[in-house]
Length: 388
Image (tube, rainbow, N blue to C red):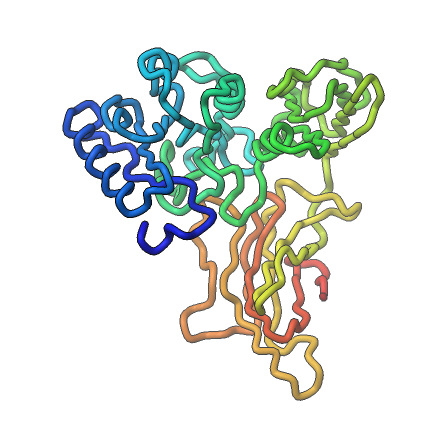
């Protein structure tokens, strides 16, 4: 691998191991990494090498760059005192994410609320994603961090079990639809103005309960109005978040963002009606491949955050000119549900003219091979279709 990719400009260092629990506390771990370091240097003397530890000290002693997997498992400040010249970074840090759009645990069905909204039993921390970023942002001698993970992925559903089929710690679900935590990082990793309020306000069955409303934002101050009642204006801490308790009743939540004392942004979350239409968005269209993201909306055009209606894509020669063979093939479909166990693509060797998959919390996705950019139809069950 090093031989093959050592001239690739995106490679910044070589990793020789990750969480080698059996040798992290053993002299053997130090010896193995030392030998692998020499191999890396011999094959590519231009780049450093690294290894990541889940807490044991031995593998990172000979490494050019030490990788710390989780600040709750590694005594980073102690290592700083013992090895002041060490180069180090956060090779893994928890995102704290859960299932997209789920705010109350449903673990028996393979879905969980974000861990960020639950105090960590080890230190009572709320917003674990913030704990990690603040730690590294406050220490310029550390080279930043990687979050576990960017995307959800199949397998390793820890801490859940079947019927969960995949990990839920991605900042994006497996279709690439963002979870709330994506806006936390967008707030502090970009200069783009961000004002994100959650949870959604379709919390049927929780009427009369007190709900913690959170805001991720890079505004100086945020003001919150719930069902017409002003809950006050608060200063946003740097690299932080804000929260207000509110009793849930259907209606609306409005967040107002201020900079230099002037209101510059407003975001509103409303209790929606039932989904009546599927709106396609061509998120990618290149090299004959199209990724179509579908949002389910109500009669006012608002995304319905709890909608799980079946969505059908119809292709074949739909909309083609006479005699034209569109050659469309469905490569796959998804909805981002980590407990979904249905069919996600046609059977091998078949090419049906349509395919149906249930949406999950307002969204679905189709990936098609469409060499002639022919139109397709996206249909929401029992409603009208959207042709494109």
